[in-house]
Image (cartoon, rainbow, N blue to C red; front, side):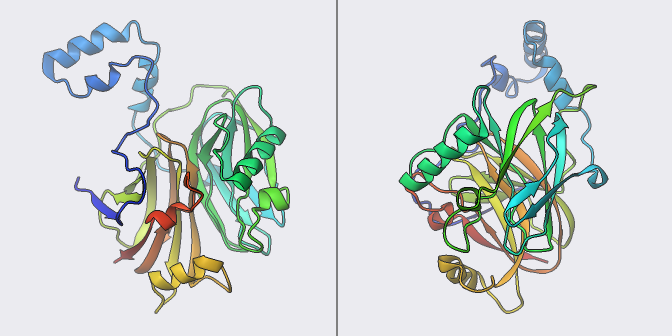
Length: 320
């Protein structure tokens, strides 16, 4: 399938697709994809017996399924807290964020490595934010439903392994201070082992968007209708995808101007998307697209302290 790359001149380090992705314990597994015929069969047979993740790979290659929104886990945002379950089972999980507050809110998902707490993460994260330093590596960003306006909703689907997780809201439009720091908008939860085996392959998608440093690459032109969009972070840095439908007569430059100081209402409707994903991670979201002009953007902070949008990761999109 041809790829339709949307990008601006890159500022800072660039990366090739797949750069920085976590490697399998068996380093030769990627090579197997380049083999063919008898060589591939021989390679697969020789490693399957010694590779415990071979069963997992078989599961991932099973037939994918559509997103079942009727089973979505509700996540409610108010000013300034989350109402969400304290524990959920592992596996592919769809979250639906509903904004009952008066401000824009979003739900960033982070997985905390064993031995670390949400309180510890918030201290380390705030220090990194204030000093333009690196985020704690033991807090892995896993996506989550993107930003949504008051009384609106967004969704995201991610595969969650058992462990300790947390939600937090990094929106900072009112005063420049993220809600997670200034308002304490964060909530921990636990992902428990499932009672029965869960499929590893993700939902069916109608469009794939790869996130790199600093560009979006679309698998096909975008047409109007209901879409399940798969996001793949193939960059070195974490990336997100925010989606805005521009109001009639408004342009990408209008949005750029608004994003400089966030004064007044945005020149369009915020439709969600997926929050920051670590290198090699994937996630899905479902959205109804009508004909018109849209904006794709990434506001994740780069190592130089500037948002990725300042490095060119903000683009116009025409839906026909």
